[in-house]
Structures are given as C-alpha cells and as structure tokens.
Image 1 (cartoon, rainbow, N blue to C red):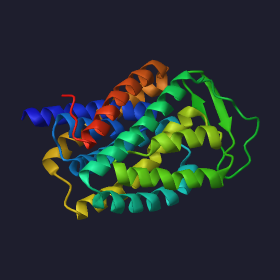
Image 2 (cartoon, rainbow, N blue to C red; image 1 turned 90 degrees about the vertical axis):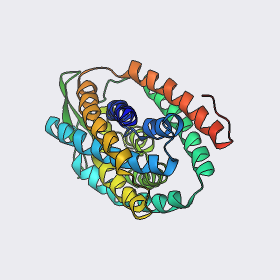
Image 3 (cartoon, rainbow, N blue to C red; image 1 turned 135 degrees about the vertical axis):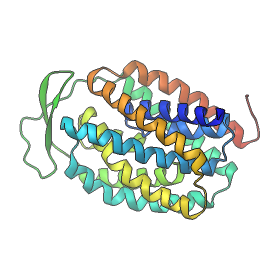
Image 4 (tube, helix red, strand yellow; image 1 turned 180 degrees about the vertical axis):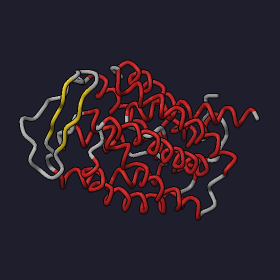
Length: 276
C-alpha cells in the first residue's frame, strides 16, 4: 500500500512538472522509481512511458481547447518521432541495467542544461506579421493578452531532431521534449507556449510505440504502472493549468536542481555507488 502511494506521488509530481515545461515527466519519474523505490530500471521506463501517454492525453485536450497546439506541425513531426521511438525502444530493451542507468544520467544532464537556459530566457513571444505557410499558426496568449502569430522555419532540421527525440523517448522512457521543445523554439521559430503544447500533442503516440516494445519484452508491471498513471493524470491537468497562466521560470529552475541531483545519483548508481 505504501509503495502504491509513493508511486502515485511520483506520477503526480512528474505529471505536474512535465506538463509545465514540456518534458513529459519521464526524466523525473524514471530516476525516482529506480533510485528510491527500487523499481528495476526497465520496468521504471515502461511505467514512465505509460505515464507520458497519460500526460499527453490530458494536456492535449486542454491545450487544444486553448488553441495553443499546432496540429499540422505536430502530425508532420510525428512521422519521424514514431520511427525514432521504435528504434530507441528496441535498443533500450536490449541494454543492461548498468549501461542504461549511465545513459539516462548523462541525458538528464542535457535536460538540466536545457532547463536552466530556458529559465533564463525571456518569455515574451515575437509575433510575425504574416503567416502564409501550410504549417504557420497563431494563438491567443493568456499571459500577454494578445494574439501571437508565427511562421515555421527550417522544417528539415526540425524533423531531424524529431527522430532523435523519438529515439530518446523509446530508449529512456522520456517524452523527448528536452530535444523537441528547444528545436521548435530555437530552430523553427515557434513561441515557447505553442512549442510546449505541440510537443505534448506528439509525445503520446511516440511513447505509445515505445511502450508496446517494452510490453512485448515483459517489462510492463501493472502494479507499478497503474498508480503512476493515475498520479500523472492529475499532475498533468494541474501543470497545464499553471503553464497557461503564469511564468514558470522559478519552478523550472527548481526542477533543474532536483534533476541534477537525480542525474548524479543515476550515474553513480551505474558504478555501484549509492548516496542513500
């Protein structure tokens, strides 16, 4: 009973922060389960992938109702993320626990850097005067109280990153947002709120493909996954509500510090060193 409650809390926290910063929550949930709840890392990744699906489903409904999601762009990028997720899932299921822990810890360090960079960057969106491309879009920004239009640039580069993000999702049980969101913002010129919403739309299908691979390998434990998913659903709703109405820079920095600590422990655990 205690383990189920702790797993529920892990899902709640992961879903809240994941939906706020566009990461899916897996970068928090996997190390939390593996390090502190003694869940085997392959089972933790499988449960996290199901949690990412729940995050995507919950937040997508909300973001679509707000008009933040660029559906055409998301479906275009999905073709590459799904392919990458299938490849990543097959590779991840074959890797040893030690190697997978080390790879996850290294990837989390990349996430930490991204979060700190994002927390220091301005949130004011730059509106484009005209949108004429098939993937261009506009949305109403509740925080700045105005309509923001934007043009999608450098699509081939964005698609390349999408494939890598899908691979990371399948390999590590994360949403891939730590690659996709920066690519959408920095490479393709999509405002941060639209980028987070669009990424939330795409990660559900990506994680579903990877989760099927882990299911086929027998790594899905319903007693682990069920409370995580229930917590994620509540957390994703809460996080998306906050993300639409407030600045998230402070919470983003807090999350970055927490993930840094977890990343260090994941890397040390790969070498048999525990800080607990």
